[in-house]
Structure formats: structure tokens, C-alpha cells
Amino acid sequence: MSKAVIRGKRDSKPLKVRYEELGIDVRLGVVAESLELESMRVLTSAGPVEFSHLVIATGATPVRLPGDGEQLVLRTDVEAAALRDRLVPGAHVAVIGASWIGAEVAHAALERGCGVTGLEYHPAPLAQALGSELGGRFASWWDGAELRTGQSVTAVEPDGVHLAAAR
Ligand SMILES: Cc1cc2nc3c(=O)[nH]c(=O)nc-3n(C[C@H](O)[C@H](O)[C@H](O)COP(=O)(O)OP(=O)(O)OC[C@H]3O[C@@H](n4cnc5c(N)ncnc54)[C@H](O)[C@@H]3O)c2cc1C
Image (cartoon, rainbow, N blue to C red):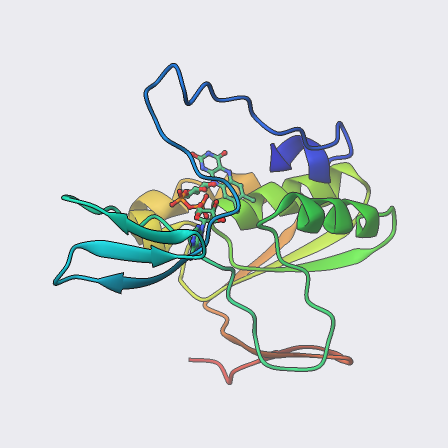
């Protein structure tokens, strides 16, 4: 899990799922390339696959911001290891976004002796998911860090994080 990897507690390991026992036909290394709704087929790198019902669960990618400054994101095991290697004592880490993953990174950074500034667009952490009132109850997750809410980051440049004018 990312939490243990970025805290330097362990390396990532694939989870073992017994697909056969569950009656699931898994085709690894196959890329879904397009969809033919009229003939109810997915066209893949290994040929067409017919379906009667379809679930698209292709996930999400982290949002990167404009600018030429270094930005690290956390989605894959490789990104978790890269982040862990940069969380060294004395580093100052700007965490953009104070939701679950931002809090996870802020905690790991504090634990590894970094300074942390959290920058969040909404008035409270987790406000996008939970609303400001409930999100505000999670402010203590940021104890030990400087959390600046109501801040919109416009760019990440080599000289630092650029913020929009105060709203
Ligand atoms: C750092 C981090 C920590 C998290 N911690 C937690 C946690 O503690 N608890 C929790 O509940 N959730 C956690 N989450 C959230 C959780 O990981 C996601 O909600 C979950 O992974 C979403 O699952 P998904 O199946 O929708 O997408 P994904 O996990 O992104 O899976 C999408 C899959 O689709 C495949 N794919 C994409 N395009 C194609 C294509 N064209 N053809 C074939 N295959 C394709 C991809 O290779 C991938 O395997 C965390 C997320 C992150 C990033």
C-alpha cells in the first residue's frame, strides 16, 4: 500500500487474487482500444470481445499543473518509490490538495522530518468530498504542517508554487 511505501516501511508487492476460483476470465496485457455499441463489442489489442453488459473501470490519472517546476504525483508504485526517495529530513514539501492522498503524503513527509505546507482550494480539508463543515473536523490531520486553505495554485515553476490572487 502507498502509505507504507512512501513512509519507507516496505516496498510494494502485488496482491494475489484468485480470479479462476471466482469464475473471472482475466486477460492480462490486453488493451481495450475502442467500443462498438451497435454490435455490443469492445475492440482490443487481442481481438474483439462481445458483451451483454459493460463496465468501464479504467481509473483516473492525477491532475498535473502548468509550469516547469518539478511535480511529483502519487498513483503507481513507481511514483510512490520516487516520492519516498525525495522525503528526506530538512526538505520542505508543498502538498497541493488537502484531501485523503494529500494528507497521506503530508503525514509521511512530517514523519520523515520534512517541513510541510498544504495548499487547498476549498475552505477546509476534504471539503470537496464531504463539504466544509464536516471537512473542517479533519483539520487536525494537518497538525505539524502549515495548512493554507482558500488557495488556488496556478503553476509550479522552478522558483516555487504560484498562487492566484486572494479570492
Ligand atoms: C495513493 C493512493 C492511495 C489510496 N489509498 C486508498 C485507501 O487507503 N483506501 C481506499 O479505499 N482507496 C484508496 N485509494 C483509491 C483507490 O486506489 C482507487 O479508488 C481505486 O484504485 C480506483 O479503482 P478503479 O478500478 O476505478 O481504477 P484503477 O485502480 O485506476 O484501475 C484501472 C485499471 O484499468 C486498466 N486500464 C486502463 N485503461 C485500459 C484500457 N484501455 N484497456 C485495458 N485496461 C485498461 C488499468 O491498467 C488499471 O489496471 C488510493 C488511491 C491512491 C492513488
